[in-house]
Length: 368
Image (cartoon, rainbow, N blue to C red; front, side):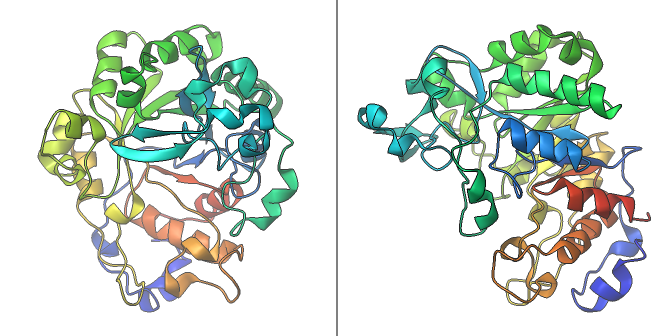
């Protein structure tokens, strides 16, 4: 157990079950820059990815959606009014529309209605300015990057830093994009194979909240890309992968988290990316950590790595006992480190964080 945790967490958080925690499967605990260093720069910009690497991230994560002309670009969602200045660009006012995305109506501007050339006219903005007011100073400075540009940056930063910077690509809303004749899978495989860096040098994790498209990617690549690792993302246990909803498959993420579910995942993937509270939940009244679930143990029994999401450094996102004095926007490094190290105790193999400097400190000061 980490030397930092016994006093900080054993009493204050009532964390139980650490004495029989599951050991990590990986030799190295990986710090994944979630959308880059999104606590410090607007997410999914080259500046955010660069900052993540400067602050110690092992891996940077581009979420991928498609343009109208079939180019993969880095955005968390295909609806971009919250992360760009599109609403302020008069020439694109008529593009505002309502669509059904994963079965829910969503109104705004969508990447698939813009060519890459048009998207390049837009500029990124901070998604949650109330929590991250410091990031608003960078609004309207950065373009929306393509996957090819993110790969080129990872290659450049690998050369300048002297360490290989790996990629963690997510296919967003794959069933939806298939339905509008802009499937993501072949474009992703093509882009990754087009560059020597991602074809042979870097480890490339490919993740999705859906199941069928990961199986499709596995079928397409077989064992031809040993440096590519497929990862099954998991939302809260009660929810379903959207492709299950479409297929009228009644299973939920909870079913995937079981021992049998993990064994099935291992037939097409090398890892799982669960919501962190599926590993260690918190008491609804006090915020104290509860006993770790069997998720990590079940995954490791199937030889799957575990990379939960998302560890964020602001008070707003931390359990009550770890919050510092101040508003929700308070950057609480000490509390965030304690939270991460509790999950390291539970045996995770790496994690997604919005502040890789905090994540790196948590790993570097941790003792198994």
